[in-house]
Amino acid sequence: MPRHGISIDYKRRTALYRLFDADGRLLYVGITFDLRNRWADHSQRKSWWEAVVRRDVEWHETRYSAEAAERAAILAERPAYNIAGAVEVPTPTAPKARRIRPAARDATDDALKATAKRWRKSKAALQRADAELCALITEGRRQGLTLAALAQLTGFSRDRISRIAPVRKG
Image 1: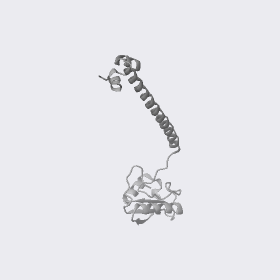
Image 2: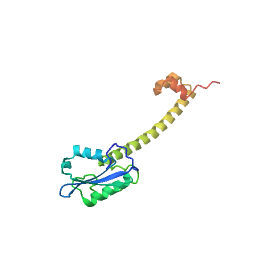
Image 3: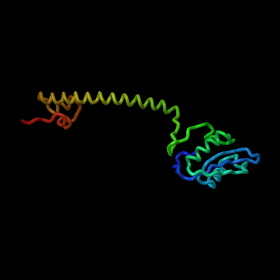
Image 4: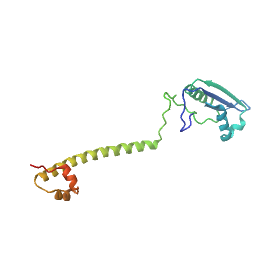
């Protein structure tokens, strides 16, 4: 299975390997582009590595086919130490398989949707209030209210009032 944060070349030739103990028991099934580095990693991190006495390798032309063969082998042969792939998952159809979303994301999604809906309603209400306020400022200017008076009533600057309702000369 690909490691998180690593870009994978799915068209690259990939090895599927099986590791066995002295009794012929299948310990682990995996895939890699580089057997030497992968096995060195296992030797440093896996407690069961000391028991490995036999390694079988088959090469696949693409990572896609190697992943499919790995999943099938894990499900059918039940290696002792595989965790990833031990339950059936669909074969990826794109270079990157979709990640399963944690349940907490559903609550976050719901909160985001609800908040976005409130924001849209608030934005629409603000736009209506803005249009009404601009109309009233324009009406106030038409009736002779000064920039200073309108600024004091609205809390806007005189410059903003003059942009909303410029003085008409003539």
